[in-house]
View 1 (tube, rainbow, N blue to C red):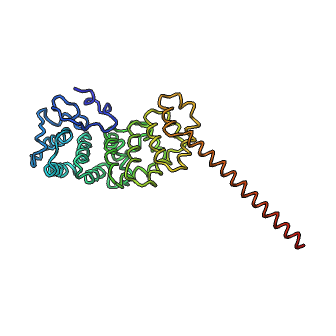
View 2 (cartoon, one colour; view 1 turned 90 degrees about the horizontal axis):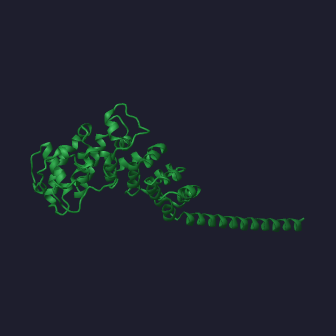
Length: 330
């Protein structure tokens, strides 16, 4: 068995679980990237995707989800695929909380991925997930933190606190990457309301960094993106030193206004000597054109000084003329 099936932390950080070609489930490991291999039999057939009705047992639903994710070169019949996903949503949507409590986040992530692939019921499933990870008494701002630390949250929901040193959950981060492709306001608000220290911890985490990148590539407004970018100020040099987090720096820079770009460039310039010693440092400095940004900033500063000097000269000249008028009047 592929080692990735045994250890979920070995799963790829990005969404690479949708193959381009269909192969036998007996010989392909792609089916297991998000689906628990213990949930379905090795005799899984692509024909399951075309069954408009099927037994609503847990195992049958899992087979259909797996088949939808696995088949890459088969065109789905829209009505049948939509019918299958509606049934899955009806049966398992209200049970997302129970599935996560049972340690089945792969199935929930698989359903989200299948909804995205078939372009159906995505908003409904995202809403079902937000309900599953948030107690009625809690603020919606906790939605994203709970998904980031999915395992520790469901281990102790009643007294859960943000774990400052834990690694973020692989599948939780993958689910957020999917969700941020849709205009889900509650998820956007949850992320932007987080403390600067928590945003920094997310950016430092190899999995969490992809969540920040997905957020900055989403439908969210520029104003909300700038909130997150601003909370990372004074830490961009530190983030740039990491291979994974340097991609987050790049995405933050691209999402910034001119003022924030200048601040980020100044931070990276201050750490240029150390950054140049890393493998990715020279590329990052060139990609963001740090020299160009700083040169432009200096040019603007010189222009401002020149403009200020002209204003002072004109003011003094006007003052002298007034003096002359007063002298003549006297």
